[in-house]
Image 1 (spheres, helix red, strand yellow):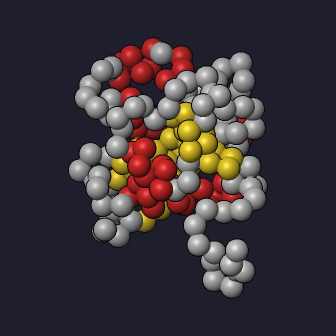
Image 2: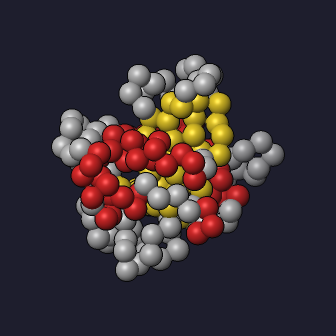
Length: 175
């Protein structure tokens, strides 16, 4: 993997979120245009970044250009996102831009977002992934599991409280 620098997502990154949302929806080939993202109230909401509402994210870069983005967004119960599980569980979205995929950037972004969610004492994260999307394997490796009671199929959940998945860190007791 090439070197990846991470920086905090900012409200000025609105165009990056718009393109990332468009790419995420079109993961298997173009189905909708950027104009359709803008016109769809739910998809357009993914492009709105509100740090004052608890949203946070990270942008990856290799040198100067952005290579990907991960963002965690709080949706209200009366306007839920595709990965909505319940109030208090924010939804994670991630996109690695074409030309930078397959080098581990998605994993770097996801692990950093999960670490930040833990630092913020967020109890769980959700996401939405369509059947056939190869990203599902990465989400499963990081501990996300299907949330069958969710409103939309493909919703996955990662509990962040209690026992962590994977081996214990240095100095942590095993078992």
